[in-house]
Image (cartoon, rainbow, N blue to C red; front, side, top):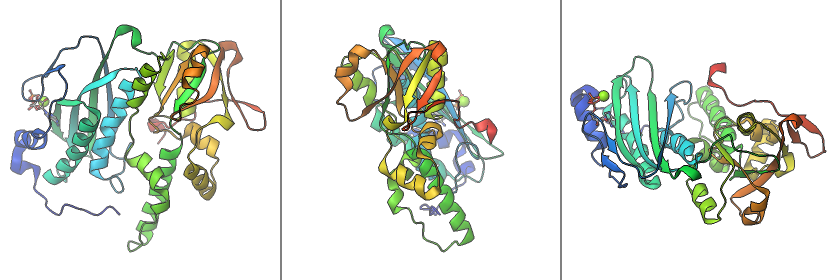
Length: 347
Ligand code: ADP
Ligand code: MG
């Protein structure tokens, strides 16, 4: 479905591992003073003034992505986003990444270049430095492992464990779109398999597909909260689905929560595509995942500071743990929230 834009196929052996690394990393620029030494020595060197935040996420072909409809450039971009999202979820500033790849020999140099174009775009858009990685062969499919570093002063780091009774529950952006984007891509893949001459019909769904293929980590939210002088009491990023993240916050904070169905921020195209696919939009919003939005709690007294902000929706509030975790439906019914998030071990 995605056309091979690059008909050139230079085998990786032609450059060798060192030549390949040199080739793909030479145009990366260093943007942070905390980067003392980037690629090229046995290890990179960084120096932070503040506390350091470290996170790793691995993407595996066939488990996390399908190369038949994910362009490599998008995959490179997304592999950085999923990691930066975790740094921002600590309320930290992302500064460096390392990228390790395992590639099968069916991958020509041009494919690796495309992957790194996406990685480079992500690094330059988000002001992070590529400071190292590892490159190895793989007998089955592509694996990308990214580690991201970031920093923040000790008292501003936000953990999952700080939510308190009466706090408000807030989510950035909207949820459910990335999941619906995946449904569209899967459908088009099936149509294409049945009829390779069919033209993909995806215009109307461009927002959904973009949310799936080219997510943007919410770097702006920690900044916005700082400007608004709001320190979240707990925070997590929405990677596995809202309900699963809510349960994490509740468990680690030792609290309960109430979430309101009518407050869930849904893009209109999520609602229309859910109708088309015969899916319940609330279920999609709660269980879809890969939204890479930030979910956090704030003190009630901070409500006036955030209430008018179009990037933030107040979707619920914190209760004592004994009250449990419930969704209040539009009809006023209370439904216990169970983790229904995406789990790669279930596939
Ligand atoms: P070593 O044998 O010491 O591990 P490598 O030859 O693996 O060294 O790597 C040489 C340099 O290139 C190191 O700085 C390493 O971090 C960097 N590097 C290796 N692979 C990658 C990659 N896929 N992306 C970015 N940097 C890489
Ligand atoms: Mg190495």
